[in-house]
Length: 259
Image 1: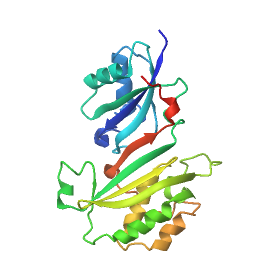
Image 2: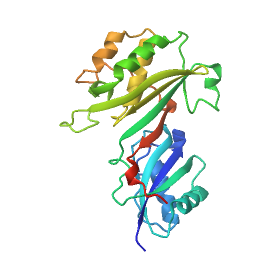
Image 3: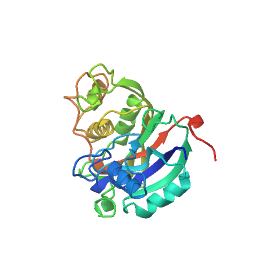
Image 4: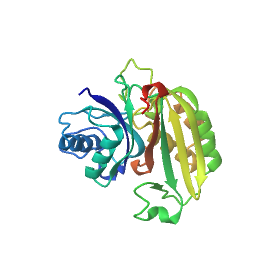
């Protein structure tokens, strides 16, 4: 029976993972998925992710593509995986895709969410895995956060907000930021950003630097200068991984095979 290309929408608590990508002798999300697929008879199947989340980063809408046997329907595979996956990984959706679908290269945009917890219960063990509990006594200037978000919109070369070597030397490091905003959600400050692509640590560097501006440790002109910088030597430390989640990955509708 011919193989099927199935898209899996994966949710995970990244706290106890060494990131998405398979690595020797460490627990990763990709590795766990491939192990369970092997137990389901799909030995050697490679799981291709839309992006490589770092250690401690979470996902509500990571996307993975898998080529599996034709006897699997999307829903049958989703149920079988969820029966055997550990409690910190869950398949939220599954869809049959055209054979040419690629979880990474077919994506048109990705959306991330970062939560800075200002409430006292941000330090609770039930919340701190998923937020950055703000340790400072100084109130953050929400207007400064909004200013930084607006400045980030549009096309920029994000060398100043990325790990050096995150892309090949001949890559222009340009990303098209299509949505970027801070909101106050019940005492939590939530940063939402969507772009055609992201560089390594880019969201966490953005948040870390924006928060420094909002705390009065840096000025707005320094943030603006980083948007045109050729090096990352002036960027603030990246915000902790715990507050970051990959929320959604978007694809052209014609890649989906309708049931």
